Length: 387
Length: 87
Image 1 (cartoon, each protein chain N blue to C red):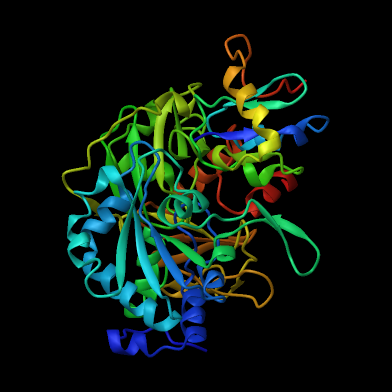
Image 2 (tube, one colour):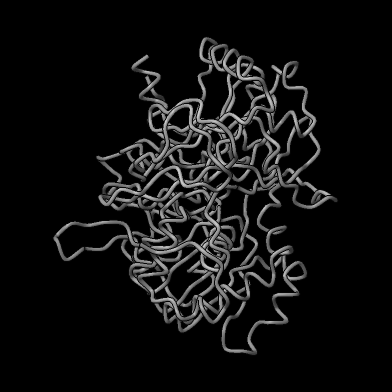
């Protein structure tokens, strides 16, 4: 069993690759760019080239760019460490041409120490897609499809051309795990769109979307004319069809809460332009009344719960142990409070900022309403159909 | 550089590509689907979805399939809605 603890650069560099992979798995790091693919698994087969995908692409997003501004030293450290641990021959950052100035501080450290370089790629919108990034930043092409040794055929992946791609925030979470011993409990995302000033939050995973929009200044109860998407104009899931009716939760791959008039198409806002919020990233850690944290979902097999209903948990306490079969990650409390429910592989923690009865009444109301709560896990959907 | 749907789509017309396209730039051109190069944002999401591997990046279309690049460029998109009729 690996330990999540503070480590110096030298100590991190001395980690074996298997040990580092296990730390990522236990810390619960998954692709924060939207894929949600378990990061540890990519590093089980180290490749020669690591590319950090810093091409935040959805119109209006600021999260990754602000993260890069705020955490320059952390990125430099983790890139240096990853090179040592996994034997990368090259570590690159993929950056849009239009963002050259924004990344000027990184450029000062690039090319001169043998650790990393910056690959500027065309501004063409590419959804941060890994294969497109590789095409634009290297002379390699990920094959469209290829035959595997077991006789099956599958779409090509970055590792087929010796590349691992990590999104900006994902790599910061790797830093947090390796250097600080800090597990994944928060998500950075942009709140923007209709009737709201642009904000970038670092919020607890599993926080209520309605509550966050309230914090952002949205009159949630009187905004039924708005819908909220989890994602931007192009790529998104519907989070709340009719604001004020039902709720949704911050997922491990939530990159934005985008408000738009009900019935409108996200892509109608493809040309939206936003300014970065003057206050920068605002942390909502400790500021929300409750969270619903999925133990699995998507590609992830649910972790085994380590807590039970009624139990008090501390912030960053481990609440789920990864299972050995399939993809599975450690799960950690994103706030302190009482486990108010544990069902359908979702751990609910109530923090007391909202009286428990009120929270329950709200939950019942949202279940009774048209739009059921939505989370990243299929168990939500199973629960709905079962109920 | 837009993606291009080629011959293998004919007789197949699986709609997986249409479902994943974030900008709804895939149109029904009768015997096959066609990607409007003016709307495609080069995201590549459709490519791995195609069960018959009909979709190529514009600059990787095989020689014998180049006609489909032209067909996509010259198709009249004005009279058709993107996607497929679901009924």
